[in-house]
Length: 296
Image (cartoon, rainbow, N blue to C red; front, side, top):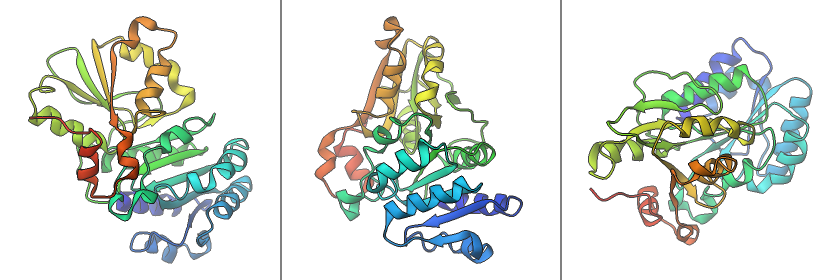
């Protein structure tokens, strides 16, 4: 996902001279091609995330579309006030690129967990969450963000994610994307890196063998109104996310159905248990410990 991101960003920056990349003294082995090609539009802000976000908002206020790249929790919780006040409330075109969402960096300690980031970012009016599930969705989501500059949060995996989509899908905020069509009126609905997990559950387990699989990579507060009509088509919708239940994607979905009480019972949430917040380990191990596992 990281390689798709940087290559796509470079291709757009070739023709759009307002694209800027800012990093917080990391991302090396990934960001160098952009830095080398556009040295005047690449900034290393150092280990100073609050300053980095304020600086990026300032650039955006002058007409730039700024991409702020860092590991998981660093460009979110460490500068939450600057995101709210400087980026979102001023409607500045800053895309926060969070690498290693969920528990991708779980072996580096719980300081690197990003299992509460949806809760923070989705509470901000006007913030668009882009959480692609495979490299093809990264390509599609980044194209949308580049063509529609706005406060946004691009949450991508660390490395090695397979393509589940056969081709680059068409993406629009709030709209589900079909990946697999099952034989009953039940579906898994994923956002982000859990796409691979959900796909494997359908292919390898009895419990979900007849389920469909959909993804929702672009979502946020302003797209809740679009969910009820999509839920109506199903007897059961199981949301799948590598985030805590509280404040996450599934919670967002249930909130979107508050005015449709007859639909609320159709939505079930598959998310992480808070036990993982104090654990250290590999992503697979922590996902399983947190409940993102299905018996064959």
